[in-house]
Length: 65
Image (tube, rainbow, N blue to C red):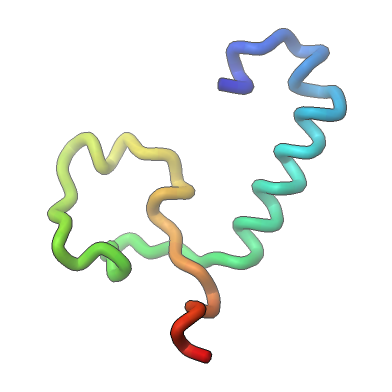
């Protein structure tokens, strides 16, 4: 969605905030290409088109205590 906004919006405060949030998410998660958090869901061709955020899992899961 950000790509549809003018450059001034992407490079302004909103763009910086979203970049910080993305970096925080990436630092607190790891790739999960095997879909270990969704064992009952089979990947489809649409799955491959999902943003990378959908293919990550937390570094530390809440139920690990």
